[in-house]
Amino acid sequence: MSGATRITVGGERPYDVVVGTGLLGELPALLGPAVRRVAVVHPRALAATGEAVREDLVAQGYEAIALETPDAEEAKTAQVAAFCWGVLGQAGFTRSDAVVGVGGGATTDLAGFVAATWLRGVRVVHVPTTLLGMVDAAVGGKTGINTAEGKNLVGAFHEPAGVLCDLATLESLPRNDLVSGLAEVVKVGFTSDPRILELVEADPAEASRADGPVLRELVERAVAVKARVVAADLRESAADGLGREVLNYGHTLGHAVEKVERYRWRHGAAVSVGLVFAAELARLAGRLPDAVADRHRTVLASLGLPTTYAGGPWPRLLEAMKVDKKARGDLLRFVVLEDLARPARLEGPDPALLAAAFGELAP
Ligand SMILES: NC(=O)c1ccc[n+]([C@@H]2O[C@H](COP(=O)([O-])OP(=O)(O)OC[C@H]3O[C@@H](n4cnc5c(N)ncnc54)[C@H](O)[C@@H]3O)[C@@H](O)[C@H]2O)c1
Ligand SMILES: O=C(O)C(=O)C[C@@H](O)[C@H](O)[C@H](O)COP(=O)(O)O
Ligand SMILES: [Zn+2]
Image 1 (cartoon, helix red, strand yellow):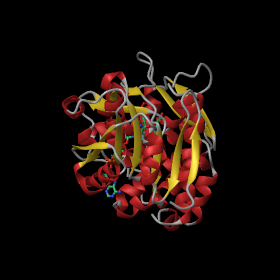
Image 2: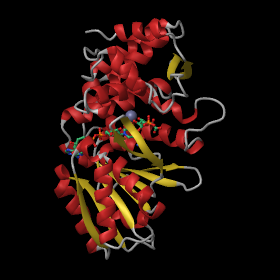
Image 3: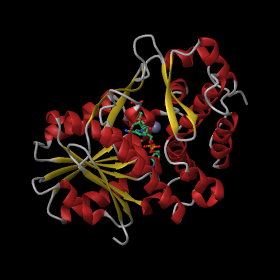
Image 4: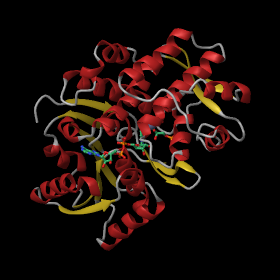
């Protein structure tokens, strides 16, 4: 390991997010002294990486098993969670044993959920291998699976004991997935750290180069914001202000798109469309200057992210948005911007306003 950066996520049980390369040697310290057995949860597509982590743990004296899951969003189901519980039960996992999630956000969401629910909670360390996992999914303790009714509808808050972001893993990530992760980075740029937008705008190609210094800075900036937000409001229950809901900017429509598209869209691509929608909603409501709304389109498009959406139909998307976790009863609640880095809430917008904002997404 050389030149790693440590970002501490505060709260009741502080933990480190380590960003760098060659970080596997850090795993035992994060697992802690009590752990004997480890289940390495990884998607089928990352069998070699999962096996490398397992072998490394065995070499360091652990009893480690591989727990292979389906790829991407197919892992986030009750059936797959039940399969994982079965494996842990058969292997005799106790409260002094641990789960390690190796993969993208779908894998760490599942691994975190399994760790949160097995014996009502065992230790979990995440080793995210996608940009989206590093900047968002593996950090902050939101875990979950999907149900037929929608995205992430079952889950728990269960913080990891640590997160290892090995930037070298990004070199094998398909371009489409790297860019998808940048949607969450841009989200943070608009809500909280405009320097992110400047870095992307200065050179979008450089910003999306897996082994470049700009991407590393983007990762560190996005993680730093997420760390600060979740340390203050882990359970998304802030009594005043937006609290953790700020991280959900662009997700109300984004999750609906994922569901309506039957999870064939990557999360980041759906969030990209959701960000443009949220910006248009705020602009049409008279709360966001045109220039900031337009900047959403230009920054996202410069990275090759989608900024228009021809799918639907709108009534199905509206129906899907009703199970958004920010909703209260029949009241839809959106995170919007009033300016750059000035997030706010828009509650119960007029249906005509919502439809008009959706109209602005037409190609
Ligand atoms: N818990 C949270 O706070 C949070 C935050 C953001 C997103 N999420 C969730 O994260 C998921 C999206 O995560 P994602 O975009 O990482 O998708 P993903 O986990 O589906 O991974 C995308 C694809 O990349 C492959 N892959 C992963 N690492 C690779 C590597 N290094 N080289 C080659 N291929 C690799 C995977 O096998 C998969 O096919 C969604 O389910 C979303 O809801 C959760
Ligand atoms: O960490 C959070 O809080 C977020 O909202 C981050 C989002 O990027 C992420 O997609 C999250 O999983 C969405 O959570 P949900 O509560 O809307 O399911
Ligand atoms: Zn997200």
